[in-house]
Structure formats: C-alpha cells, structure tokens
Length: 182
Ligand SMILES: N[C@@H](CCC(=O)N[C@@H](CS)C(=O)NCC(=O)O)C(=O)O
Image (cartoon, rainbow, N blue to C red; front, side):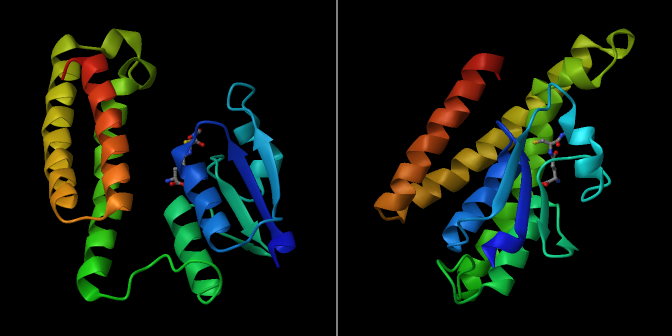
C-alpha cells in the first residue's frame, strides 16, 4: 500500500519531516518520494501544483487522494493505518488534549519565529522598521518563555524519552536566543 503513496519533499523543511516521520512510524516504508529544490523553485513546478495548488512542500498523495497540509497528512495516516506501526494519538483524554493543544499552539510559535527569522525576506526593503522587528522579537521572547515553562513541567514529570526531548528542545531554544539576542 505504501507503493500507492507519493511524497514530494524539500530539504530542511519541518512540515516535510512531519509527514516522513509519520510514514516511518506507521511502517509505510517503500513509498515513492522525490526531493525537490526550493532554490530552483521546483516547488512551483506543474508536478507539485497538480497535487498541491499552493505550490508548497510537502505534497502528498495516496492513490487519488491528495492531502498536503502536514498535520492533515499525519492525521490521515493515523486514521487509515490505525492498527499498523506505532499509535500516534494517545487514548487518555488528558494526554490527547495536551497533544492537540501543543500541536496547534506550535503553529503560533512557528509564526512568531518566522516573523523574526524571515523579517527581511518577507518585508520589502522600503517597508522595514527596526521598531517592528523589535516588537516581533519581544513577542517571540514571550512565546519562548511559555514553551520553556511547558518543557520544565515535562522535565519534572517524565521518563528518559521526554528528558532527551527536553534537552534537544532546550538546545534549540538556546541557539535561537543566542542568535537573536531575545
Ligand atoms: N501548512 C503547511 C506549510 C507548508 C510549507 O510552508 N512548506 C514550505 C517549506 S517548509 C514551502 O513549501 N514554502 C514555499 C512556498 O510557500 O512557496 C504544512 O504544514 O504542510
């Protein structure tokens, strides 16, 4: 069944990693995949647009079903292959709620991160203001504090897996903080 699946992906893309990890977790190795180049604008090629009219990666297709949003693809795979590979959604209501909460509020974190990292990329030269970038940095700093708090709670109540997860995330946040002095 993995042979009916096609994933068009780009290097360095967390949304693409999400779908790839979900495919691995569901034991769906052997799917068709193609690495496309953002630099060469291959994500705007007809091959991608045929699956994903936004011209973004990941672009994922299972048979005739296209599901491109990375979270949507993860939920789709879990629901179609529930009893295969690892379970991706916990049963306990409290854990499930926490999973959904962190998944979707993670999108807010990425939005705020991108507003700092890609400020010069998103905003045309004549429209850039130091004060706007500073506001974005402050908003990111507040968001990061929130996530540090979540991760500290995880550290207090967790097993080794979460501990490793926490350490990796701390490193990640620390790097961002150092880089942007927020
Ligand atoms: N909400 C989408 C976001 C996908 C996305 O932003 N992909 C980026 C690469 S990380 C992309 O293709 N950017 C090129 C563009 O938007 O033109 C998802 O989670 O799948």
